[in-house]
Length: 145
Image (cartoon, rainbow, N blue to C red; front, side, top):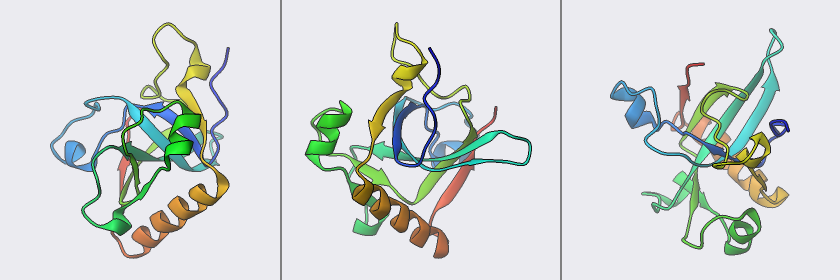
């Protein structure tokens, strides 16, 4: 069994480190959560570099700070029934697969992926993230390997 191929739009199980946690000097996430891969590229050294956006149950302070995941998409991905948003104002940058990618207990590496966002939802999330970056409102948290 192998890790899933990282692709934009893939929702993964990941130990996401929030910007505020990183600013407090933490290196490990408080908990694992679903995250959406927004970018997957191969760098000059041949490593797969990923940008992942967190999924949260906390409603955003401003509507432009996050995109709500429709209930049908949550159900298809196997997520819980509570309302959830993909935050577009911060991202974790890491090398795939990295130590923070999480498998389900007792399962193999393939269990780290929930599935893909629908193309239209992915484009909306991507565009909102890019707009937040243009306005310097989206932080990147570089994760250690």
